Structure formats: C-alpha cells, structure tokens
Image 1 (cartoon, helix red, strand yellow):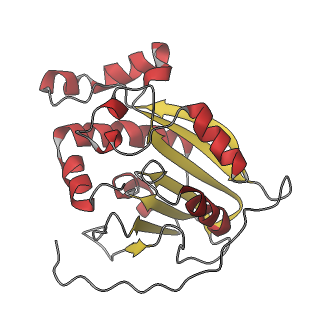
Image 2 (tube, one colour):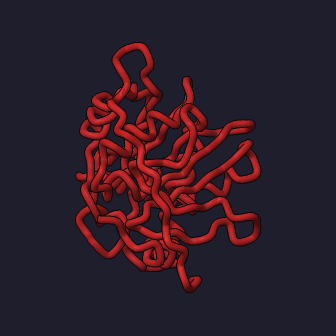
Length: 239
C-alpha cells in the first residue's frame, strides 16, 4: 500500500527527511554522475532526488501512482509531474534512458506489471535504478518513516526479481546508515554514520539499491497485457 503523497512531502520537509534525502541522493549521483542529453523518469515519489538532473538531462519526468497521489514539481518551473497507473505508463516504447524507482517497488500491488512497463519504456542500453528499504536495516522495522512502509527487500531478492523480469543487474549499492531519529546530535553526524556504515555495516543500511540494464536478446521480453486507456478526474482542490 502506497504512502499518501502529502505524508511523503511532509517527511522530506522534516530534519530527518532532509538528511535521508542528502544521503541517498549522494549515492544516486555516484551511480549516475552525468545524465547530460538523456531522458530521465522518476517513478514513485522520486522528486526529492530528481533536482540534480533537472537542469542537466534533456528531459525529466516524474510519474506518481494514482494510489499515492501527485503534487506539482518543481515549484519554481514548469510542472513535469503527473499521475499515472503504475501498470500503464503514459510513455512510448523505448523512450526513456534512465529510470529511478523510489517509494514505488515496495508499495506496489502490481509489481510485475509495473516492472514490465519499465522494461517497455526503457531504451536499449538504458539503465534502471531501484531504491528500496533494506529488509535487514532498522528503517524497514519502524513505520514512522516512508521506508517502514510496504515490503522490504534484500539485495539478493531485488536482483533475482530483476532477472526474472528480463533485466540484467550491473551494480549495487547501499545508503542510509544513520538511525531514524530526530536527535539533532545524531543528525549532525550523518556523514560519519555513512562512512562508518559503508566500511563496516554494509548489510544493515536503511536502503538497498540495484542498477540494471534491459535484456533484449538473452530472453523474451515480459508478456504485455492489452493496454487500457484511463482518464483521471481532475482534483477539485489544490494542496
């Protein structure tokens, strides 16, 4: 079950959420240091992590599942966020070079159809990066943050799922070793927690990440369902 988009927004406006965003975004940037001229899709609630790509990529799109809700993004420029059916992405085949999934995979009730859609819209040679709560980490055990919602994964579980859906895992990473606390003293030492965790406690990170490419020749692509044409009723109020 998805977290409400307003709860996600409020979390990332909190002190703990800002630290979590900084730690995870740092790791994402190490994996994708340059997206110049590429088309980037954020699926789930990815907007806190898309800002570094906004002025660099050819195009950035944020799609948020209907069960979660949508908020305008960015607030200081033309809106590029839209509501979608996670199993029917409103994008053309092979139209995206990079796909970032966060606050999506662990909450989806249509997991395999969603991954089949990601496979469809991903261009040949494109990359998908999945960021999910780590089953072994403390963040997945506490429900006071969005990383405690849904179904957490181990890195091996996530890699196995990707291979089943015709993706080839190419790299893995982890982030968020700081405990999920609002303590100012702990939050101020976030960088030290990350350095210590990366060196000694890699299996107990808050989130695990797997980057994968699209398999084209190794096996047949996932079976595609007949596409539906959905129309969402406009909201009567704004947030």
